[in-house]
Amino acid sequence: MIGIIGAMQIEIDGLKERVADPEYAVYSGIEFVKGTIGDTQVVMAVCGMGKVFSAVCAQTMILEYHVDALITTGVAGNLSEKLGIKSVAVASDVVQHDMDLTPVGYKAGELGGIDIVNIPCDKDLVEAVEACVKGMGINYQIGTIATGDQFINKPEQKEFITGTFQAIAAEMEGASVGQVCYINKVPFVIIRTISDEANGDSPEDFPTFAKEAAAISIEIVLEVLKTYHK
Image (cartoon, rainbow, N blue to C red):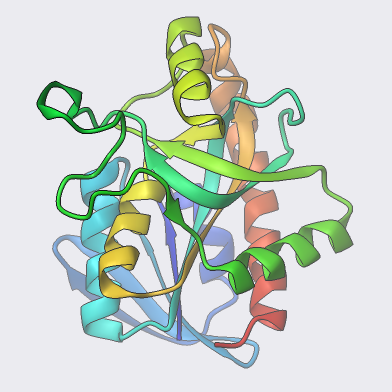
């Protein structure tokens, strides 16, 4: 079974419509929908924005549904010159850019307890996503996706994240899902379509492009479900 997580309704609604024989359950205030898309068993949820909601959602999918892999889908702010609005960032790994234990001897972004900065995504999943994105003719880049409980729209925020972590996109859920998957040994990947340039125009751009960007991510997930079998 494949778990699929999005932070907002627009990131999941298009997938819910494709689920056959849906079964619904609520855990920790999050609604989970289980069923099949094509030949693949899936469970999906709108987790809510931020690292805590996404971590709770991922852990629930692992404990209650015993998922074999997790996909986080949705939108992100752009940090790369190779990407633009409606391009796709595929995570090779994820970091938490707002994790700072440097005063007590850790590296920027290092997660105390597991002592790692960059959490790697599953190579087979990354390759499956890349093949689908290539086949769809979408501009994309594979690289580090940075997560934090912040909407990135200031130059100094972008400069810190790109300079410190060489990230290609910024969002609010991927690396917390990654941390949960890492400690539970569950394969995962993050797929993000660019909705804004993570600059001063982002508050205006985001509502304009988020729905269109989310729809692109949904189509990619549907293609991945056809080809990836764990």
